Length: 178
Image (cartoon, rainbow, N blue to C red; front, side, top):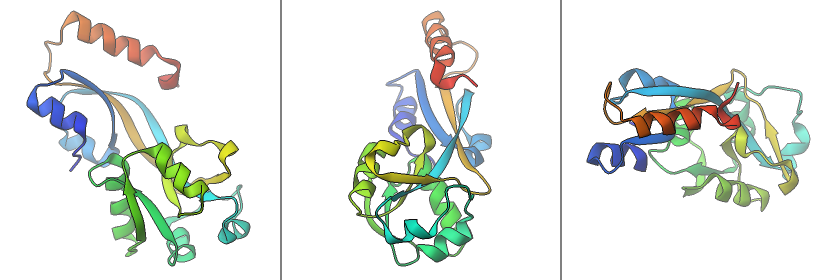
């Protein structure tokens, strides 16, 4: 179950609207009205200096079976429990009977990338965070792994004018344009 701060704030009534990400598999059971802003791909991130990086090809889409075999003895920098990425990667790991060695759980995509760039491990990261200038190579998965970016409303049908305005403003941002 998705257990982000945003969901907790919606549950408590502290916020009326959230911009957040969620695994596509969880959308059917999501308890709040939402609008999908876009689908965001997750990519596999590895330091360019990592010895296994030399065996990989940027043109190839890697399957989870290939990643789990190649990286079975490597450290993974995982997202915090309850985050959309952690839910997705845990499901994929279970499906492939793979238990990665987790060197640490972090609550920041940028921190994950910093740790990967320093050779602390490998990770899955939203493609929007991919930065080739920090010594990391990013590999696409096949099939593609993606999550939904959402605007979520606490109540259905009676959102205020300001909530609707804010949601429309978010949807019009270039980040969410197709």
